[in-house]
Length: 124
Image (tube, rainbow, N blue to C red; front, side):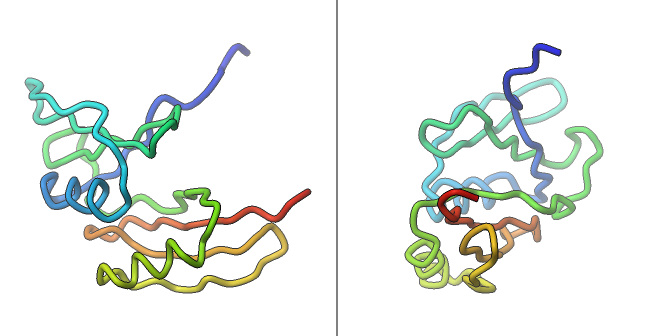
């Protein structure tokens, strides 16, 4: 096998503009693609420097159900500060909590896709 990385993760959303505002303005992701395709709008965002991008897949793009993604782990250097920033932006955050592998918090995007923030424990 010669796989080097994941190209993108699909996040099904009901409203791409609303999702874009959340991922760009609240999470600070950058837009890596935004173009019209025959099937609909191809919209991708990513944290700065990331190899893997997130495709904000709207209605008509692949038959995905908005809000059905779960377990998306976002690594951060400061889960407490990022959790506080999310809460200030009106996002409901569960945690952060200390776990054997690090300090983690959970939240959802406006469509209900489940995401987590993790500050990894050294040496785990």
